[in-house]
Image 1 (cartoon, rainbow, N blue to C red):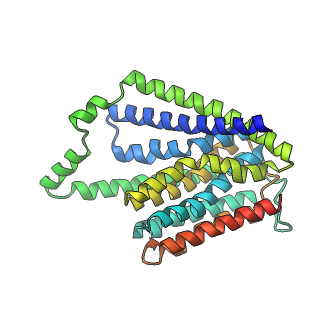
Image 2: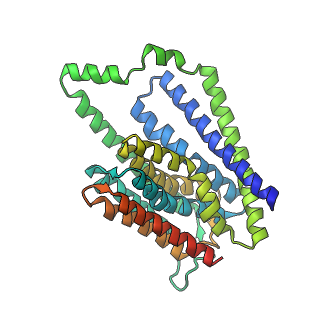
Image 3: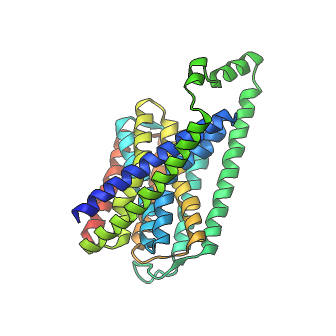
Length: 337
């Protein structure tokens, strides 16, 4: 048990380091190929922060432990919305744009509802055991992700068009600001080093995910705890570390848009892309996830949406409320072990 617990930690470290190396290498390579910064942010960086969830969920499904895969996504999204936003808001109140409140958060709500739909086949009990998230369900989720990305890129292009439509001096200023300085260009990774970062990052993700899933399953068996609960807590907590670190640092620097955008984007990626890919590769039969878990995930987004309407800010007290909700949910999980 002790060895497996240590291996879980090692697995988490490898997964997080792998995601970091993969993102850094891919971003540097994209810059060398003159890919616009907005495209890098919307694709490589966003996918990089969700890479831990993707690899852990995919490996879990392939190894015959689908509850870890689904629990990882449900638990990560609940933790993102309640704990990460809660803690971040307590560190520094988060200002939220009207666009995020009216468009981005609703998309996250739709994604959560879609997951509930593909997971639920009966209301007769608190369990949804036996239901399969099929390849067709996976394709439905991936279609939703394609719509989300189309919408995101379209909005980004509109914003860029507004900027470039300004006076020539302003355009020149924006262009100069987005171009790396001579010193930054010198610090850019060489092409071969970018490739090495990507390969090593993928290797760490694969090895770390395998180690993480195997050890978490062994600990669950040893404690007599379901893999679903382990996925909702230990696995979700480990794979959500990048989002927690990114959001807290962004909030301390006064970059609330990055902090809240990180959480909303990650939630949408987790449900639509990660579970979509996982289900297409390997259909998942659910055993340990309950309606309460799915409901908590959905209501957490609705709570965030409601708090966002109060002066378009998540205040410190609202962050404390979200955090307390997460603590209460965690207590409920542990009580029912």
